[in-house]
Image (cartoon, rainbow, N blue to C red; front, side):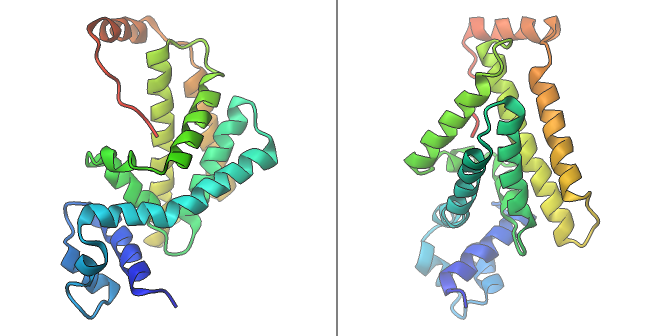
Length: 219
């Protein structure tokens, strides 16, 4: 039997994924969680930001451990192998019964709450940094800014694909077989990352570098 705090965390994850961060009140979350006291969410978490942190803390350790396990087990060193480990870990999370985590993360990104994803444990941040560095080492044909941009887009596509699949399964809609979804996603990622940049990409890139325009970081 889950604790009241765990029920609140899962209820918040579900409601945030469905209605957005700003479209849900702490009171609604308490009702969804079945908390008898309307102020239960406030009592346990204090604020919406702290509750968002709690959702990430609830899900992230297992997700992080699974990706680490896959990287060690598969001894992934090539670009496809690295991407396969990342995509497999994230897609697997969306297959778990009752999971709305990928929809929640996608909502955070879409609604401009990226800064909340930046408050990750140092161990996780270091691991992600190392992983991104390993990916980038396979893309020497790309200028640094374009490489960061493509990797950010690749990570976003993995999350969004998993979120769409997670949402469809929750609604009882048919989804492609898991193996097909995974393989096709990785094929798409490898193709886009290895594509030779066109002059149409390189010209505005040079202009951004010259004017010091900062490209968004990625996680």
